[in-house]
Image (cartoon, rainbow, N blue to C red; front, side):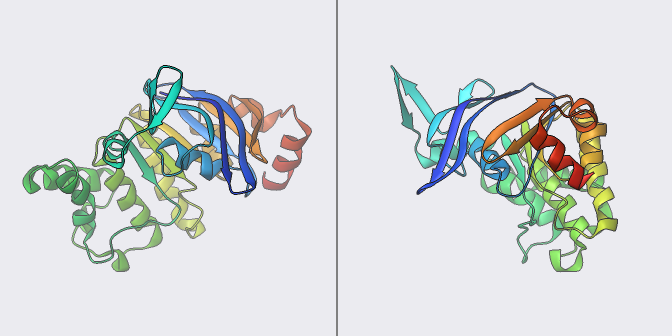
Length: 250
């Protein structure tokens, strides 16, 4: 579903990603862990072309992200072409980024209506099902300010799912939440995994990675230091840098 080949990303003189190679299979829950500043979130944003890669190749479901190839050269797609490709990729951010002037159900309906041109009736019916799926059917008419952080994040997940994506990206979806609210969000993500959604999750929740993840990558300083099955990496890391990191977070 996702293939990264020698992906580099620089911001000015800051070299953030230094040659990332990895593959994510369909229906796989792929977890990214590592210290702050290691490039995890930047890599995630490159997958849906919120950030443009500086070198290498990134593809989703066999198609290049943000570019087309002609001969040996890559040409960047126009913004409207990128937007079309991005419809297949859902993203959930640390901060929920809900529209504050819209109710929960209006937030979930907005993209299918505005981007896909769906009727409000069709979008509303799906939004109701999605809010029920994330345990918030009774909060459909509430505004974000009337919801807890965990509830807002579950609305954000429903909003991403409303576009019926083939891939979901989660950028530390629980890091801004109070500890007692984390479980509800992780439960929704577990349900998505059980339903076969392909997911890439940047997380500090090692329990979630161990229980739900199919693959885990430890990144540091813009490179992949270690990868493998989550249980293997977390219980028996092979690299000293991985051991040092895990000794502080487990």
